[in-house]
Length: 290
Image 1 (cartoon, rainbow, N blue to C red):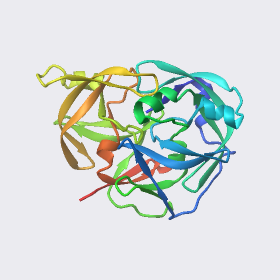
Image 2: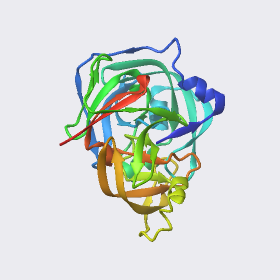
Image 3: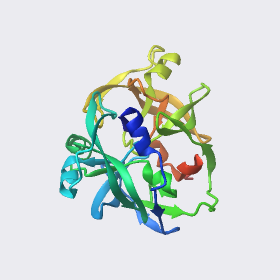
């Protein structure tokens, strides 16, 4: 999950306008790679240059490493502040007029964020990261994502997906689905294919449910993405209900960011489903793999 904070400038940059264009070949299957076991990579092009891009459904904007931006000759852009899963914020620049290509889709005249991704690549992947491909690709098409079989299919809007349909609700620029934690009522969980680590639970919800004071074990680990490394508290949730499927004894990291959603569901949980996303129509379908 990556949020870029720049008041009205960013909002204007991310809202699709009349210059938006997306063309695609429906029904074509594209390869999906997993690196470090749970980070999703797809082939993409930035202004025609081939790159391997990390796929992140909860990134509000596509992020390009500053070295690649220099290679492409991108301008300086407007300075903004971003917040990833690390402890600190990070500096970025918004640059317009960029063409993003992936999964047979061509998205022209997009605004991207440019920042230093070297620390993220070194800590999370053990190799260089050029691009984090954000929610634009999910806004542009209906996608069938099969993590275990390593493929993504671009579907027609009239294709009827299998599985349980869940309404997507936008909160703070990211899409959320309903999830039930233990015996509590449904809460909103960020749908985050960029989270290749543990599920995250917001500290506010954890406090409300007394999860840090009911006697369950609390451990610590190092983690964090953009914004640097951080020391994280980890608890075990007895049950999680996602689309009617019960997961037991799920480790979750306490997310103490002020903008944290109640939950953040990533690849470790979502890989158990065939996933169909349709951000434009505010829906996702989860079909449990039997």
